[in-house]
Length: 368
Image (tube, rainbow, N blue to C red):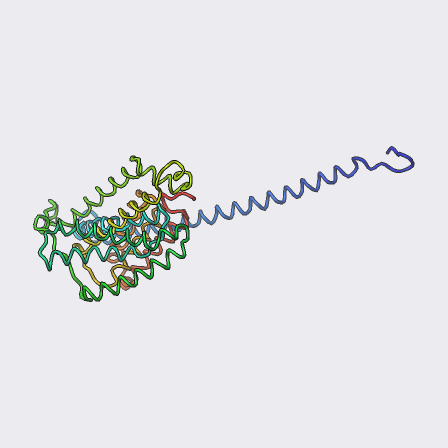
């Protein structure tokens, strides 16, 4: 080793040691990271395996219940067909109620916990017009839809437009409004369950052509309206200039305003449309099911579950979420083993947990 001025030179001597230490640290860090990744993948894989196993077992149990009189025989097939149609009509009703929340909460990111109150308000208005004033059902539904939209717009202008981006404050305000609305509707419309009479054109049953079965025409009409609403909303949001402005205002409101677009007015129109959809769902729900205190919270929870399952802001996800929720509710209520019927609601939360375990953003949701 060379010496300089009687001192031993150490130049380059510690480099291999430092390089070796760095290589060892990097190797340990990479091994630790791979371990974390493998454990995360294992957890997701186990969740997927459990969800898949539950789905297969559930399908096998329903299949057994349907064909319990013997494979290849009719068994409970007629009953299964009616239950399936009930699930489809309930899914249509869920989608009508949840599509408005998908637009307001999922797309605009406005936390509206009074959405269920708008649903019940629309139903009560339709019932009052048809039963007390003798108004035609079609006219009553249009009036109820617009009335819910106007009330929602007033709520947005008076309370929510000043709190954009403040989720907790929006939630507290709309919860307070929902409580006030619930009390006022109880005072005005009473606590007795009411039902809207369907129009004469759709009041009777329709023959299905198999097993001599018939099914209420209005429930099939609900499925058709839900499909039409879904297609119209998709076209409005994805293929029109207004929908492009809505999406641009959500992504970058400042830049959209700088381009000369009145973002507040655009959001107000979108909120009005979402509230109208809630009122439309209430008018249809009051005709298919019934109207009673507490139904607002039931459909609020159902709409939130549909949005969570499908993914924030996805209409296709809302449709799939409504189908999954409706089929799980109907099949679990009928085909769960004896003694488990009262716990059919738990299956809904199992569905939500399974979806979030597999995809935390929902089936069609994307990370923010």
